[in-house]
Image (cartoon, rainbow, N blue to C red; front, side):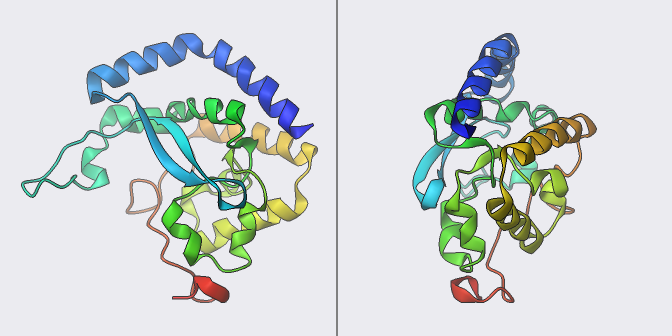
Length: 204
């Protein structure tokens, strides 16, 4: 039932949001250049890699050494607006249609984090990742990695259709309130380097 709900809902929103999507794509091309869509390999169900789609929110500005400048410099005011309104996430509906992710589930993080998880934290990959999740409606990027992973694993162990509906409802509220977008001192969230107290292969 969850997969059917994901497919029908994501297709519906892709159609309803098409005018907004086109407008955003045009502005991204004008203000940030191309490619319009930022894609990055992320771990999906059981850690299987897939390409996640988002509207780009940063420029490709580089320093004298030829390397990309820090995120907080490349993130423009327009990019911040897209993130604040979660408009950069709209292309992920395509990922939902493809079956890479679900509407609700633990957020897909970076591939390089996989060997850093403890056995308990790795359980977040026992379900499809999602556009939004239990951690996103309980702090998003304003909470610590340890707190976020505990919320993710709690969702895996307690997932249900009613819980998904609750998370989707709370997500709409969070988007309108623009809560938890950034962690203090970071554009989004500091990099995960392992949890010392969690035990297992995630120790550092």
